[in-house]
Image 1 (cartoon, one colour):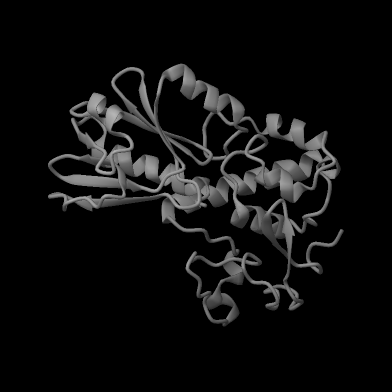
Image 2 (spheres, rainbow, N blue to C red):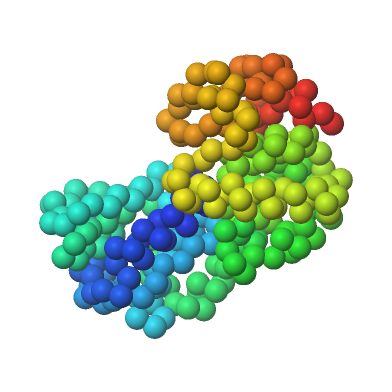
Length: 269
């Protein structure tokens, strides 16, 4: 599932290609046809993101709410748009570009109050200017749940997925099984600040890189990572490989229905 930086990058891409311009809006698949009939020819006013939720704003109060889920994909291209496949849920096109949405978990036309209700049930997003890290810490500091599980709870903090969860805990030497109530305010501030920086870099580069400059392949004289997800990381999907820092074996385990990765030596209880 895409992490929050990808959704914020998509919001930027939609805005850059379509904001302020009339768009032809269609649903070749047919599952969103009633909504696209209402939106066809309207101007895209703005695009907004909160965690893993994307919102396309048309007119004054019409919003297309998109959640990609596990299988959703967005593909941009230059005009003229080719004939769409019958899997395209939503297509926007104008005289310079087109964009296709395929396989989302959610694609719904909602009102402004309904959009606000989605925001209200989500935790603060490190990539949003209105984020309140204190609100997230209040939930963390009262919980006996592991910090690894809390970071993945979108009601606590929105947009953090499996990669950022594993990597930020490693970068700060935090045992993923430490209870939330044992996270100090200073440590939470450090985790939050790091997430903001890492995720902003993810938006800029459209990929996740979490290793510090002194631990890059060039600096350490090691081969670059080869993985479909791209980016240089410390522990994510590196189970049973040696840690870049201590040489110990990276561990993996199931936690909250997701694979957890950590270094027992660098992240001591």
